[in-house]
Image 1 (tube, one colour):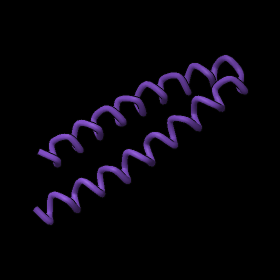
Image 2 (cartoon, one colour; image 1 turned 180 degrees about the vertical axis):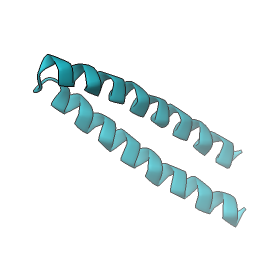
Image 3 (cartoon, rainbow, N blue to C red; image 1 turned 45 degrees about the vertical axis):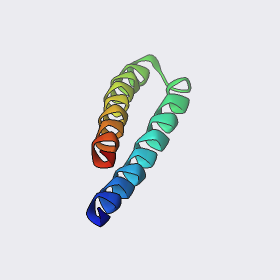
Image 4 (cartoon, one colour; image 1 turned 30 degrees about the vertical axis):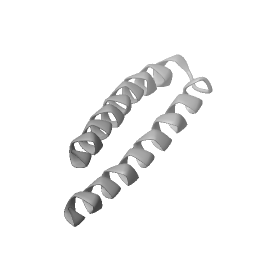
Length: 63
């Protein structure tokens, strides 16, 4: 059980970092030119996917 708790905590830290990065990219997106905004949109999609996958990993670690 201790190993699962450590893994869950690590995934929660990772999730926090992913969410912070996503928020940063989203806030910058409106302040850039069109080309850069399109690139940031793609990055946001990928980062959102990382958030979802990390949330799933946390669920698995809790099981």
